[in-house]
Image 1: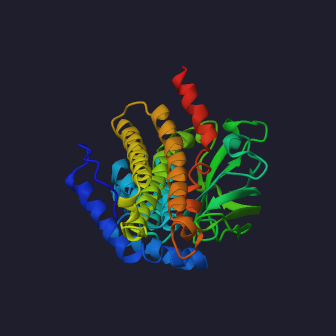
Image 2: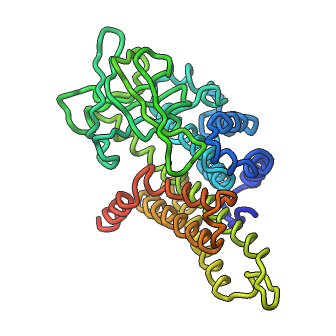
Image 3: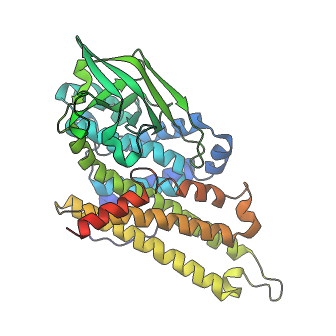
Amino acid sequence: MYLEDLKLPFLTTEHQLLRQSIRDFAKKELIDGALERDEKNDINETVRLFKKLNQLDVLGIRIPEKYGGAGADMYSELILMEELGYADASVALTTLIHTGAAAAVIYEMAPEELKQKYLPKVATGEKILAFAMTESDVPGSWSSYMQTSARLDGDHYVLNGTKVFITNATIADLFVVFARTNPEEKGHKGIGIFLVEKDFPGISTAEEPSFGDGAGSWGSVFFDNCRVPKENLIKDGPTAFAEAMRLFNYERMENPSICNGIAQRALDETISFLSQRKEPKKGLPFTKAYQHVQFKLAEMYARIRASRLMVWHACFLAENGHPFVKEVSSAKFFANETVRWVCEQALQLHGGYGFSKSFIVQKLLRDGFFGGIAGGTLEALKDRTARELLK
């Protein structure tokens, strides 16, 4: 049971060693307990395991070394996401938000003082990050019309509003928060980005149980006259939102990498299950007795491989300075649809056992649905792909 080596020529020995170290950790700490953590919705255990990843030096995987991070490339981030997605999507999603867009906004956009103050603690996992942008009354694809406000009052900004569907909401120590600093500007040019500590007066959170990611933290963040020191402004309009969205294209490689890990786990679990099931007449395993089963497994494998290659190709383009928006947009929606299809087939091939909470395929199916909603819906990414294609 593993993610196949795609023999990509741009991956080095160091990348392979990183994959092996994450895989060894996952086998020891994550895989066997994933179903139990999901059933218990044990977020404390998920946090403990997330912080334990610090021993692999991956919680600041792309944070520059001068701030305590590993300073690794995007290839390393994808390896991390694939392996964690395979092992436990709950830990993977907590890690995705922490190491992905939230961290990138800080090390790419924040003033030097903020970087020095916060990034070393982010890199060790001492401070967990969340990315607070989505609001209940504004569809996610129209986030630039957000209503959360930030009013300058002396040496503080005063934030008011609510953010919803925020991964890590109840466990985060630091929130990258998008708020409107210019009420006269209704679009993206009026938005600033802040770094808000969980202990600042006026901030609170609430958990929202989710369909998947059962041992993850997903919820709302409330700002009620929350006072944020003005030096915690990462960047103000008119360019802050647009710059953050440019960085968000990189997260659109991490999200489908988790999905590809989940899909591969579903295929491996299915092969293992069907190999042990015997048809009564000749006593042959289902994998040998039924050609239609073999065909289904072959198609699952092919779709996963195609999905992984699409994501890795988009990453190659990004790492080498080529345009990649069309490629990453199509790779994301393809991976998001692939994981749903593969996990549905896995559940079907398990028969009644697929509905049993004793088998992990039902969790994999639920976890797999996150990708096509978070970080850009299937529809939004198809629209973006078409716009790039038809330029």
